[in-house]
Image (tube, rainbow, N blue to C red; front, side, top):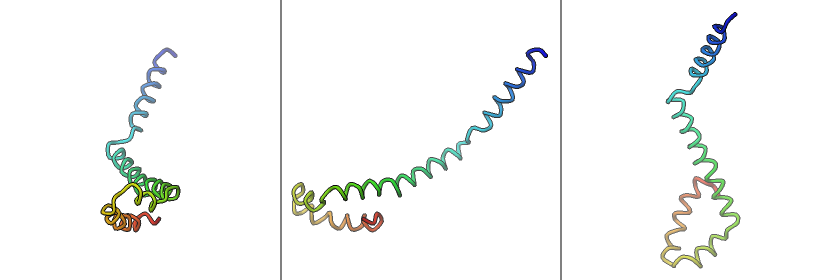
Amino acid sequence: MGYGHQYWLSYYFYCSALSSLPSQTQVFVTKGFFGFVLVRVFVPYLMRLAARYMDLDTLFSTRLSNEARGVFPGVLARVGRFIRF
């Protein structure tokens, strides 16, 4: 055999590799899925970790004014419903 079989073999593998590339829809769905996991799992985990190692009352009383401390508990309560501190 000459070089013909090598050419057809490489052409076959090249085409099969191209056809195995994900479509734009698959890429979009995958990005959406990992974005959802990031927002719903990873970010709450980081916030729980931060809340565990930070005393939020001390942080708010020393860094923020009384007006801001009046606003933040409501915000934290709303966020905490979804995050479950």
